[in-house]
Image (cartoon, rainbow over all chains, first blue to last red; front, side, top):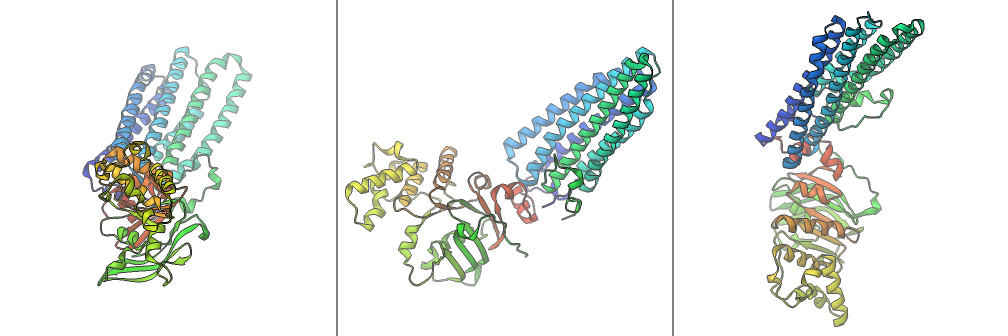
Length: 242
Length: 263
């Protein structure tokens, strides 16, 4: 059966309720932190702000610590409560989600490090229009995936899953135009490569947001849609309430 | 109260019990209402549900333990391997040999370990001593007790621990070669180690016979059973493979019960 964020917090054991609520809250806090890391890494690049880039790179350990903390809480709930059904799915979804958020954190520091290289080289880099465009797209995906998780909203989650294909297309065409720049002017190879790494990192953020959205569907519907072709999903079944 | 049909993935010929519209009442009070379900052969099926949901009543109906209670009335049919267990040609003692039962509190007879296991065999008679010894050893081994008692078969059954007594009672039931073993909260009076032994035993027996388990302990149902039926107020709410029922039940009432939520 489907669960909703309201019915999910009606445990007879108040303590258990609280433990599950805390898992969700902490995951959202981690999600917020990761969102901020990605946003600031891009901002540092576009503004040429190397201090901000450094700050992002140094902030990654906070994301890592949150992953360990939340995983630890999940282990405790599994050991002490032996959750079943939607509670079990929640704990599994949270464990999986922290892994993806942690990887998004890594991508954010990758972006920050490449931004520092670009800023230090002092060259006006090409491809920043593409970076801005794709970054807005994947940050929206990430935000929507986290909102879908918080609200147990499969409709929004499914939207994120479909968005990922669009990001992949944009990434492909951005890479092609950057390759053209490199072929035209071999002095641009260094900076363009850095931009390529940044685009690659953003594309990966999109993939992780897509994973988060898939966990929402697993959590709410009990259906594992990983490794399924988005075109073949039965959308009616995945978004139907009840 | 809506009742959806059970999800079952075994064909009718794999059924051991076949219940059809079974209703049972104690006087005017209904205990089971219109139960229709099939219990698969050589598998473990668990009945779970809150106190008073009818799960023990249902278990007892499967070997006609209610016959002695005149206030119990029944409608509907129970078939064992295709035969109506209430048909006039069915002898109750033979039915209970085929469908053995183990209760919550171990109830060994006040006699030796050996005599407990040989009790049913002596009642039936016709066995040489040698043959009887073989069956006692086989039953105690099948109940995972032989190694612990082989040197003191003549000792009183009451000298055994609670967990050993429960396994002795299972051996006593197995000695008469039943087709089905009904277990009513078989581990609820036992410590965790004895509970694990009983659970292992349940799993090891399912290749040879059909097991039906009633338990309050949902983790136990999840650990040992292949199929789980959730009952509430005498009705079957949901019946599914255990893996499905405990990870993704179809109905909100099942979800609420197994996760401990308010309805």
